[in-house]
Length: 87
Image 1 (cartoon, rainbow, N blue to C red):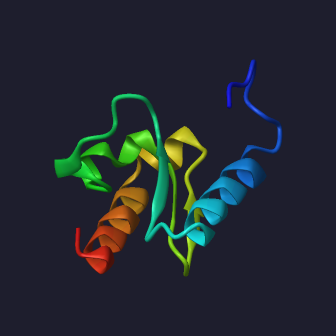
Image 2: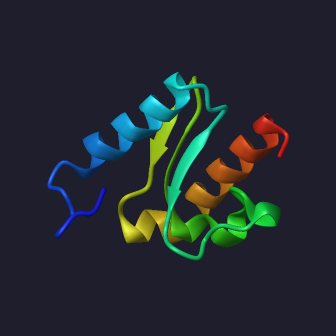
């Protein structure tokens, strides 16, 4: 799907897409900026500032604000999730 502009309900859009992926059988799903994907760096803290949403069957977490995504709490949350998923 391509948008001309960021949807005003971005939180709802990302949450529903993550939930859809999980319901379809994914163990986890995430949204990141172009270039943030590398098999060796899935949900690692060093790319955490480029990840804006992640989810499992138990949780959906979003980091839509630049300040939060750049901070240590988001990186730590991704690291914890990575450890739980045994990636």
